[in-house]
Image 1 (cartoon, helix red, strand yellow):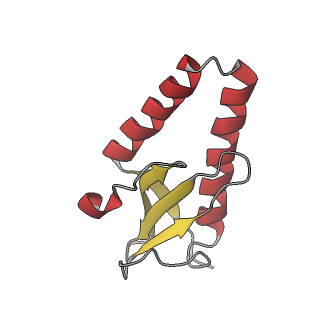
Image 2 (tube, rainbow, N blue to C red):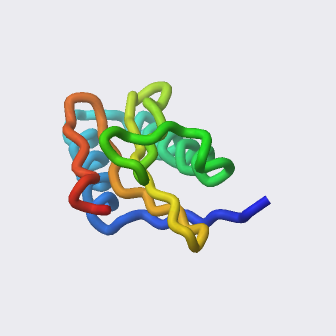
Image 3 (cartoon, one colour):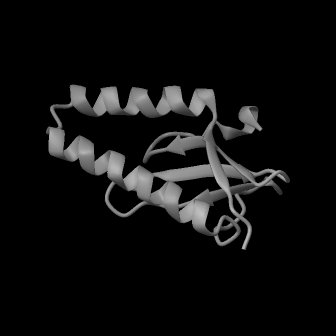
Length: 104
């Protein structure tokens, strides 16, 4: 079985940390923030174990999407490169338009 490695696109990291900042500004408890981080990590782990399980994101032929996650209803958009690298290019929450098209 091929071993995959995950990399997070720089702009996706910025969006992710902005979402954590937003949630903390909404008076979320520390426990809720930890649950959010754990859920995103669990999503990344599931993608890493078998990246071709999840469906293609339309209209792309190379971007896949995982989710929505259980509690926070997030989608994780990613590509699988020929080198075996998985690049997460976007985290999109409810009501947010995914911005992965400019990150491919």
